[in-house]
Length: 80
Image 1 (cartoon, rainbow, N blue to C red):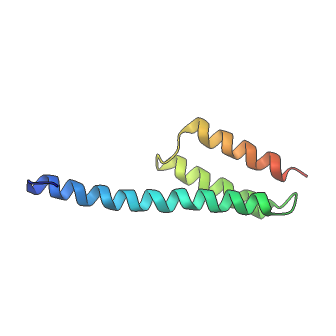
Image 2 (cartoon, helix red, strand yellow):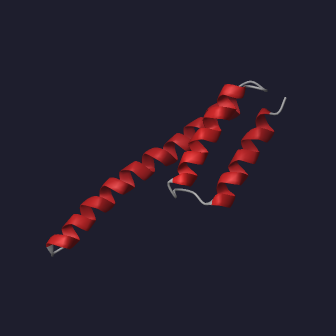
Image 3 (cartoon, rainbow, N blue to C red):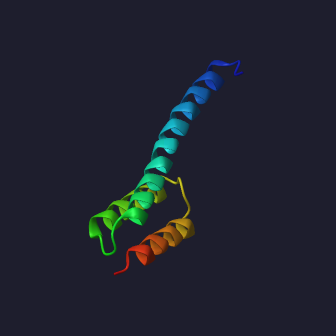
């Protein structure tokens, strides 16, 4: 456990960041699953998945190529 005041604060911050990262990761998983189960050509599901993936990319949760790969996979699934 952290001993110094600064280390305690850094630990609190890391816990908050971890919680938010988990929320964003879960959003990516949920929207891609919803897109996978959506009917072919559903543009709303595709847009939601793209939004969640782009937001995770912007926040540094996933890397650039991972985001591109996931977007391509979702688009391929929903292609009419």
